[in-house]
Image 1 (cartoon, rainbow, N blue to C red):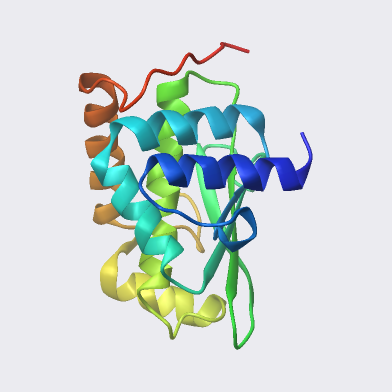
Image 2 (image 1 turned 90 degrees about the horizontal axis):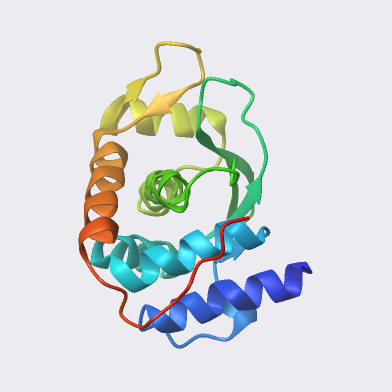
Length: 178
């Protein structure tokens, strides 16, 4: 699937979430079919997920969601601040999509919450300002020096998991297991 098609698919998921935007306007750009399935699955079942997506979409944070491992192999998903310009801050989320849809949804919700936390803090433009943010709103990870966590991301992950497991889709979708 091309990047243009992937971006379009994320935009379609945003339409499901009530956001009418052109594909090129979306701030969340998925680069993997399985991650797109999880994105759509969560968007159609979870108000919490849609709220996190809306927070990112209304910011200057551009999120690329890609398949790939984190530097620390013990971590299921991760977000890295890549670049900040006067117009946009770019982050990449890495997730292993070769898991159950619910596992990918949980990771995606968790990491998108971190993107929303960065979006709410316009002073975050580099690694040092990211460390300062998480010294205030979160805590440092046990396994690595530059590993940060927030209770909000943990809570969003749990809440989205509950919503996606207990609520029917806003519209019918079939997810093919790959």
